[in-house]
Length: 142
Image (cartoon, rainbow, N blue to C red):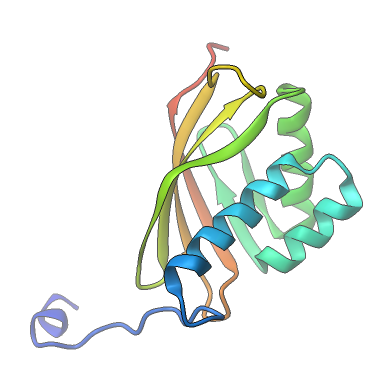
């Protein structure tokens, strides 16, 4: 693989659904966090199906899920643990090839964040999330 890269071979980047990759990556991040903030289970399921690949996976130090049903249940569990708090992307979304990186915070409106982290996201060729690996940068003590 390394010799291929050095010889000029390149893995093709994911094809996003518009001609503006920066817009696409921010839109995907906004859709992702809309899922985390959606309390209506039916609406959340629709958002997940729009945003995630059917066999999409999520893993962080506390949670793990695969597929639409587990993803929705995981988000519902997180909402139960942190009622009244909302997730939001912070800063820019970094992108190369089929990978994204963004930072996020969890806070009540107008209040300091109680948790934050960094997610590494893999995107399918049609612009949906296939995997998220989350890292907690700071979190409440258990």
